[in-house]
Image (cartoon, rainbow, N blue to C red; front, side, top):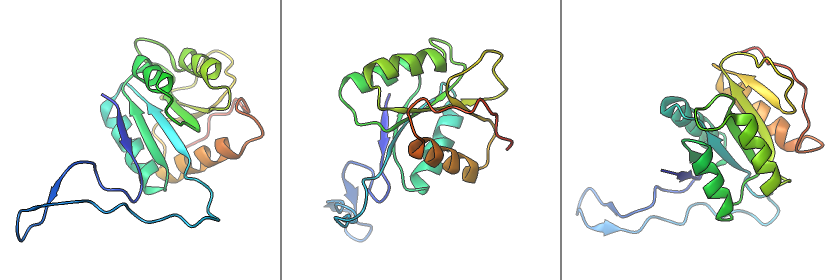
Length: 164
């Protein structure tokens, strides 16, 4: 299952007014001023539901549009359907395909997509993308995502493992 969450937007579907229990239409959300840059979209891929949901919440609270997938196959299917994605945030170690393998495939499909990897412990191999070590505080995650989005290229890497 793939979820899309957007800051300032209600969850899709009918809602009920507590006083009348009649269906009401959700508002369109806050309008964006023409001089504001578009909200970056982050695709979160992690096979651990608790981690994925926590990361989604942190990113939505930080003002990002979030797409979510429980694994590489779902993420690739989403990208093949032309979903707009600015950054791929993926777990390094997943059962069906590693985060590195996913990042390489994403770079073939969408060379402009930035990549940030999450790992519970450092990788033994050289990696072309920045890695953030789990667990991480929300402020570090937000800072690393902004850094990846503002970097000079989609494959800008430091090889560092930031301390939580």
